[in-house]
Image (cartoon, rainbow, N blue to C red; front, side, top):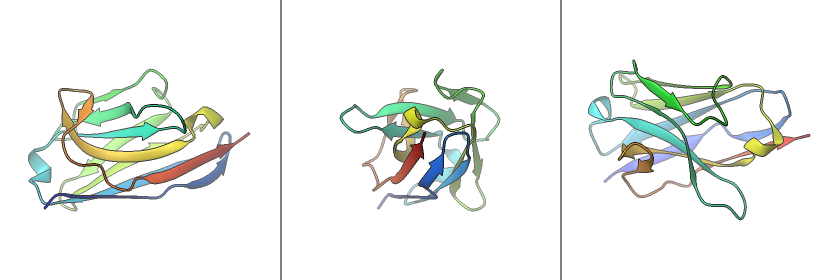
Length: 119
């Protein structure tokens, strides 16, 4: 079955950096567009970034553009999110998923990884 396991979150000061990883299994990762999403306390889950199957084409939410970089390693079935210049408003649980209809996740959500940015 499909498994999405996020890791790499933590507590960081504003202006700092973190790199998230997502280990994917149970589907053909190398043929699948992938994305990162996040959910802050009391808010709906929102789209953060997506990448096509080849890693060539990427797209970002305006709130993270220029600060976050999505990438993938198809040989390792792993998705990454490099987050720089972090802000307190980036605090959320971060999730990865296969992309459905550009801004949604296709599969059941994993447990996510908590990112907390202190001011």
